[in-house]
Image (tube, rainbow, N blue to C red):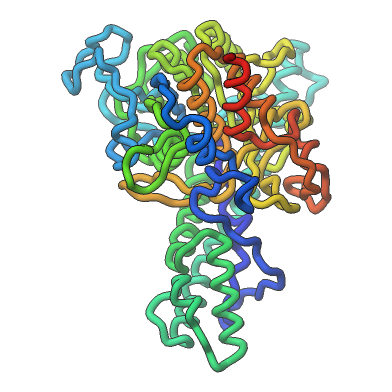
Amino acid sequence: MTLVFRPWPTLLLTAVLLPAAGLAQSTTAPPPVAAPQWHLLDPLTSPVQGISADRTYQELLAGRASAQVVVAVIDAGIDSVHQDLKRVLWKNTRELVGNGQDDDRNGYADDVHGWSFLGGKDGRNVDVDTYEDTRLMARLKPLYAGKTRAKLKPAQQKEYDLYKKVEKTYQQKLTEATTNYQQYSALYGQYGAGFDKIKQALGVPSLDTATLRRVRATDPELQNTATGLYENLKAGGFASTDALVAELKEYVDDLKSQLDYSLNLNFNPRPIVGDNYANVKERAYGNADMHGPDPSHGTHVAGIIGADRTNTLGVRGIADNVLLMAVRAVPNGDERDKDIANAIRYAVDNGAQIINMSFGKYYSPQRVAVEDAIRYAASKNVLLIHSAGNESKDLDVETQYISPRYLNGTVIPNMITVGASAAEANERLAADFSNYGKKSVDVFAPGVQIYSTLPGSTYGNKSGTSMAGPVVAGMAAVLKSYYPQLTAIDLKRIILQSAVPNHTQVLRPGTKKTVDFAQLSSTGAIVNLYQAVLLAQKEAK
């Protein structure tokens, strides 16, 4: 999955319904839910494993001067008029608004707040794209379907091997999406009917947590149902059953989109962009629409990094003196290597000092172009933050792209790969969806039920390594802001060295086996801003 956030069903299908609804009753209590913006809290003074951001500002940074830092968000787009983001958006002061001209001659006309490599000059935009598996399958199947390796020329055998691998992963995705769509579309209908029966039985107009908390039914079974539903709504971070059903519908719609588009061998939206896709050196394509058709993911990511801390609205970002540059290169589906390479270059050329990259995939046919862009970023002293992915995979065994290592095997020195941790230091501290790897994941950061900005000046929770990545990007921005002399290499080293080791016995993501949390990443730790600033202060003396 490209936009890296938690698959919907993993936490939420424990809601307790009346037997008449046809759904099984939960037999285990759900985990408690932390307070909104729990990731900002201090683990020594609260029951959650936050990054100590609030404490850092109160005790270490109060009254100190800071420099403004530009953080690029390579994502699906950002809501530029969000009340908590509009003040902190990067602005290209060399570009005149809306005149259709490339005033600063950087190759991109009207790029006032950023650029989209997913748009056409006519104003149209790519929303859904295919998976990389699908694109490879569409190209390779006509060449190799029904053939045997032994009868191919040596030069063709390597590509044939790729075809057989892609054939397997593509079919797995197709089967999973088809099965889940059938299951959850049926569940969507059952939920609606079940909740209506509970409302009728309780005599209430809505099933929100406030109502359910007050319910005192004379029927013990009905009371148990109300209590269980309340607990499970809280565990899922939902205010009401209406909110739960709305998110379930969003998940079902996403599955339908996967089947209709992302897994469709005959679907190709690239003509909308109008570039020569095979030419990875091509730069000047796209449009200035950094909002895009669906900026939900990017807006949430942006808020985690730097939502306005000076107002009294909504949420507080981690960084307090930051400008957020929107670079749209990630569709619903898999990002294309060419777009990512150009997005990195655009961000670097326009002054970004930190780049957040909450996306990932398992095939990278134009990997060299991406790695060339990463080397370019390194030469300009830019730090990259990459989310580890949400497939519960060991990345020491299976590579996810962008890989933390170059093709030659050397570690990328200016990139941090981030797994997702939960609020409480118990067996679920490592998020059940998070990828991990003692050699391939650097560190963990809060990524479960993170409360942040959403389009339309709204707010909500999302979970995923997509949320953990911007936590680290926000931390890096704070360090760079208050200690401008720090290089990208310094930032990475300080963040990793200051992370707090944790030896809680946790469930290895995707399994029921327990493992020392410290075995899931190279640091065995969770990032902590307070400790990072202390280390930066010490080194600055």
